[in-house]
Length: 346
Image (tube, one colour):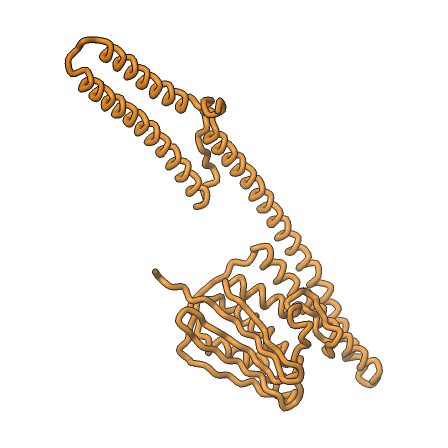
């Protein structure tokens, strides 16, 4: 109870009300003890005056408290909007001002964490850039050396065979490095999406053309279906990357004569893109883990996969505020469905 009166304003309000009550009591006693006519009438008037005085005091106190709270809310709203320099005045005693002090402390801690995270991202950005440059040079050199070996050993079939295998492994390393860099950049928030209104049909056609030669070589068909009028806001290059990873995954898990189907449709508030195949499918126990990095099923017959294509696709989709889900049946095929929310003006 005593702690309440630490706040001077509350203490002053309480004292003022107490003085009003004492004044009314004293006046009432004097009127009751005197022989003034209509004493009861005067007592009623005094009680009304006391009540009015108390109401005025309470109104003034709560109006001031309301202004203080409104100012605090305004400052917090400014902080949420991006102003990191805000502070709430807390130059008085009491629970409310203690709360304001704690809010100011929290703001200081959040600012410190934000600055620390900014520095960490800057360090990561520089490290990734260094790693990228350091890896590109030896990979390029190894590819050149491997090409020279192939040229010089055309009449040596065993060496040709191993140099071709070496080339395949070098390609895998290059893909691995590129995907790792892309995922790390997305995680670190280093990628600025250049969004524009893109036609989904054109994006799908671009992906199809990229894989057309491989599909024909393997005896597989890539089929497109969807309205040519559907568009949505996205970063063209990154969305093509995401869909390409799904199509590559489908090609890796289908056999000659199988079909890869890219389809799209628009609903009231969502643009949906699906990649389906009628290939080997995914084991039920693996279905919930396929978006984990480097995850490889013990049932998988795929010896070429690195385990980064699907996690990269998920990261790209989520960077566009979209969702991705999968459905699969063993020996019947797999489907991946991406949903992008269409922004609406309320």
